[in-house]
Image (cartoon, rainbow, N blue to C red):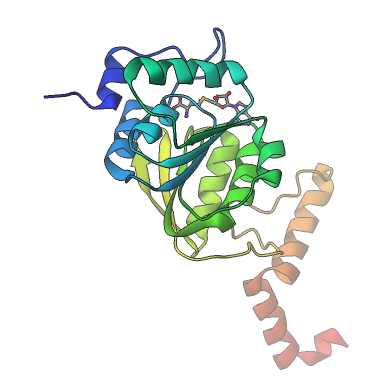
Length: 238
Ligand SMILES: C[S@@+](CC[C@H](N)C(=O)[O-])C[C@H]1O[C@@H](n2cnc3c(N)ncnc32)[C@H](O)[C@@H]1O
């Protein structure tokens, strides 16, 4: 029986990233998931390139990959040649995603894999540029979800009805489905899962006062209490 591409990579990992680069490929389980899920002709885009690019190419996806490294693209091409994987439907966009995605010609995508720059705010920027172009029910894969910027994004998506965090594959890749289009709320009451309200920027003696004032005047329960008091004891507000 022929082994899956993921199993082949696991047994004999090809070297696609420059020596010394801090970059492993997608986890085998996530590569296997891609291999089993992606259908020929799916419109896909990833930030970061590597093993995932080869798997998506082998699945027959109509794929774009954004990487700042021409060397990486060349290595991927040689590896694809060696393995007889066609790259006819793969486009390399050489550049950093924060510069490439704003000038990307949008198209509807079945799957987006974010695995490029992981420092804040790049995963969030990648999501911002691509989310509107992901189809309803399309897949968003977030790799290295233990890293803080990715973790914040996962928590945000978990809090929004427009997205469903379906689970994880391997120990670091989170699978999310887009349920509908949504512009994120413009205002924040600290309910979006991206961290609580914080007054840590104030000197310690001002924090407690600011916190109480906030609880009373800026949160829904606090405002409900103020409305109740205003109604039943209006003299307190004269
Ligand atoms: C973890 S590796 C990608 C792994 C790939 N998904 C795989 O399965 O092998 C990270 C990738 O992000 C790329 N990268 C780093 N900074 C980037 C940036 N600013 N924009 C896009 N890609 C970036 C690296 O060149 C590398 O291809």
